[in-house]
Structures are given as structure tokens and as C-alpha cells.
Length: 360
Image 1: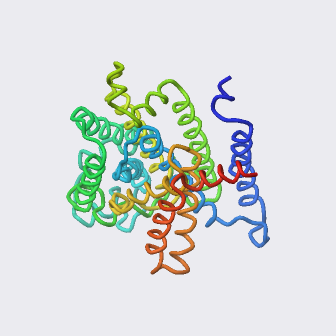
Image 2 (image 1 turned 45 degrees about the horizontal axis):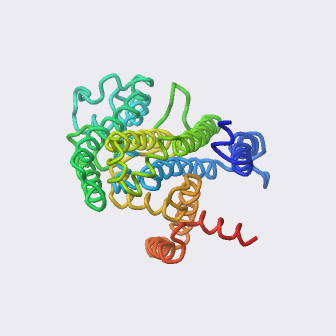
Image 3 (image 1 turned 60 degrees about the vertical axis):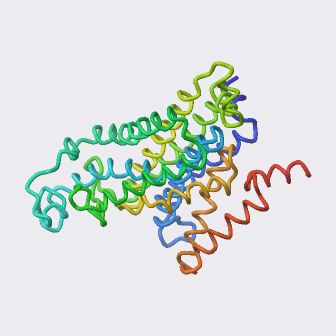
């Protein structure tokens, strides 16, 4: 059966518990428990966990290409940011004339004395068009880039360096005011989504639940892929691509499909991230952010999917704590964490759990 192929009993139990937390515990304790009660879950925790779930989706997408296909990308932050910008345009149009200048155009365009929207903003007042862009823009860029890279047999550290250069170039482009995406400030001050106030607890909870549902769907889709014949070919490409090609498989198409799918998942995660966090700027394209994504997967465990999501949660939970309590030490902690995992936990936290389970 498909259910048994995807996960064992323990895996389904974990998914059921997670679903109960996302769809029952958080909504009830946030929306229906009095704010003065010690059992009330504040909006801060809803936003924080929603943000971490977006990062977990990105980590699973990264694990699909790195853990199962052996493709290490140091530019996945670009696809995440492109999805955020695509949906951010719609959110900016939803502000309408409620901005500081009381004009129908975004405030940064009014400040720059722009008289009309650039062509990239065409039809950006449509929710469905921008949702379409969330999928197509990262996917198309990944497909074109991947086609030429994989056709040229670029792999290993050379591929990683090129992806890092790509995201750095995009970051510099988006920093320019002339591109029409808000320059270094990006998009912020969102007011509505589908004409519904975005800051209300019910709207934030709906976004939170949608993110949780998509994370679960991403895990199930990824698990279905890696347990299929396609996934077994991917693993063979990771371990010995030359032998797979000798057996008659066109490895380029396998890598191109999983690479493009991974980028699309990142784009959707970015679109879910923006309305919850309330800002998107070129800093999300920073090469350091993309390197951090690889660290999430390494900490959680490559080739595990659920471990990658766990790694994203652990690292970003620690980041939330350290950047508040000891902001000057966060990068040192992150570096030590990566070194420690590389030396002592090469299979990540999930590998540690497996060792403990075998000993028990």
C-alpha cells in the first residue's frame, strides 16, 4: 500500500501529532483562550513557528537535491526570495491608497516619482496571477539554469560555486531601485490579503495552517518520490552517475526535474513566508542565507527529509534565542554547530536518533 511505502507506523504517528498541533492546538489556544491566560499562545509564537515551517519546506526541498541526487546548491535562497517577491507584489497592490502618500502606487514608487508601474508588475493586482508567478518564476529560472549546467556536466563544487554566484548577482540586481522592487528596503507594510486585513489573529492563523498543510504535503510528496523507481535512479546518480549513464539512463533529465521541483517548492515557501513575517528584501538572496540552508540539512541529516525539516527547526529555534539573548555570538555558535555536526554527527541529528534506537 502507498501509506506503508511512504512511512511506517511511527512516521504516521509523528505526522498525526504534528497535524494536531498545527490544526487544533495552536488555533484553539491562540484564538479561543483569553490573552491573559497562561495557556494562551501569543501571536509571536504563531509567527515564529509559521516562519520555521517555511524554512522546513526549503530544507526538505534542499534535501531532495543534495541528499538524494548529490547536487549541492548554495543558491536556493534565490528561489525562496523570488517566490516571496512574486507574492509580495500582490500584497503591495493590496495596500491601495492606504500608504503614506495616499497614492494607488506603492510608496517607494511615489517617492521615486514613478508615473506608472513597470512591466514586471503587469496584472500584479490579481491573486491568481501572482500565485502563478510564485511557481513559474523560480521554476523557469531553475529549469533554464539547470538545463545548461547539467548538459555541460557541471557538478560538484563547481556547480555549488556557480549557484552562489547566481544568487549574489540577483541580490545586487534587486538592490537597485531601477528594477522596481523597492531597492534595499524591499516590500513591507502589508495591509490585506484577498481584501482581508492581514494583521488579524484569524488571518494569521489561516496562513499558519496553510503553511503547516503545505509542509505536510511537501514531506509526503518528497517521500513518495524518493521511494519510487525515480527516487532509486536519483540515488544511483548520486552514488555513481557514470554507471547509471552506462546503463542507458539520461541522467540530465532526472537531475533537471528534481532540481526544478526543488526550486518551485522553495518559491512557494517564500510566498507563504512573506505575509507572515511582513517583509521581503534582497537580503533574503544573500549567499550566507543559502549556505545556512545547507547547514539546516546537514544538522538534521542528509537523505532523511524529516531530518532536514527537524534541522531547520533546531537551527532557527536556536537562532531566535541567540539573536535575542546573545546576538553577537550567533554566528560563532552556528559555525561551531556545523563543525561539530560534520566531525561527530556526519549523519546529523536523525542519524543520532537511529543509533540510540538500535542500542535500545
